[in-house]
Length: 517
Image (cartoon, rainbow, N blue to C red; front, side, top):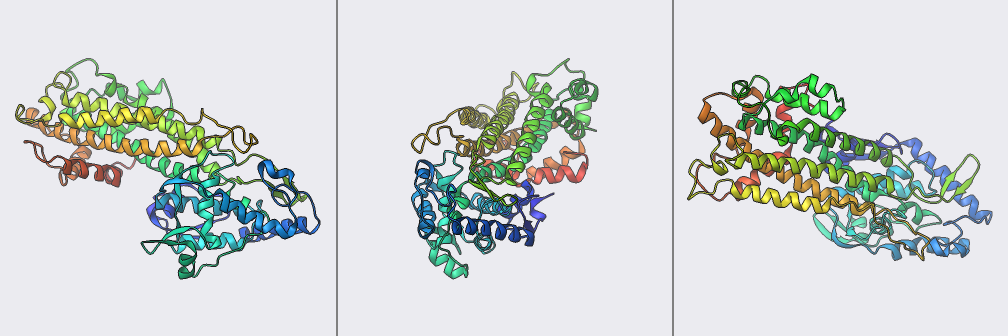
């Protein structure tokens, strides 16, 4: 389902998908809380009130937090305890998170609370959703989370406007949270027992960054198949490595899918059909395309599955269970499931960029391009052509290799060693987002080079390319012209990046090849 076509999302703690979350975060779909979720939250809140009335000992309700859990808190101070939690935990630093990440965080936190295990008043969750719908976006610095007990610092910044504090972006202005909430007509609150914990104990920052990166990685993997197939035309590549019987005897799902895509994209290409006897095999960057792209696709599919479980999970502490009125202190806030797959996503996307740059090297290197002019310029010597495009792509790939070092293998104890193992999941998620951004740029460089190589090859061989590639070729040439003589190439690079990020290449292919995946 295309997130851009989703206009309204109903949340109840279950059934939220990456596509729905992207629709809210990136395309401003409106959000509604289901009536049965409001009822579930009200019942959970009633249990908290009962616990206080009966003077029961319950972590985070009638006690302090972490090392201070040994200290009993009276009913009259429980609200102050919760507000102090937010005020003392809003310690994130750095540049503000992107608006789409903040929107995803707000959506995910509201969805988790809708399950009715957190003891929060439904009015607060409804106000959080109203902030989304009225575009009141908290200023949340990007750094400062250990990923357990959840994303405490960034989520505290998210909560501040609900208390009439903090800062927000509203009506294209940065202003105080209290002023923005007043202007937007949204109620602010004094927190009661358990509510501060309910709002900030969770993995919603890392998951928000992760789901947006995962969605983009899915698009990037499709785009990588497209750019690779264009490169195959330019390099007169062999198609036998993509046959169904070859990939069928090693039946990884992603490998078979990628091979099928390449077959569909290169089908009915007179240029390639005339080139199949030129050599017996191609280099790995071409011949092993299904194996590398396919493994990356399988990794991304696994990441998506884990994230969608996390998006519909209750991740605060303690948890309330109405059937026997239990208040249980657990560890659902620990970000390890997200941390591991965020590192996995970064590694997979880094590999998509890595092999893309190797294909580009074959396009610009006359020793490897099967007859194309050096650096894809027909007027070499005074003109450098695409020489430094490969240089820049190599730089991005090298940077990705550094970023792909896993964050989840690290841990540092906090809170007087009560929180003695943490996930670093938010660091892993932020790194994966950076890698995805770099990878799109690497594919843009390959796309430019492949289109240039195709035009030069057609001049040599006087043969047409596949019908799908022809449509892609003309689309790219609308914004990136033939590079016959050196010019201010930065405009071409900017335009190529817009093309790969827009998803238009995927749209064109899917309109012509319904079976493309």
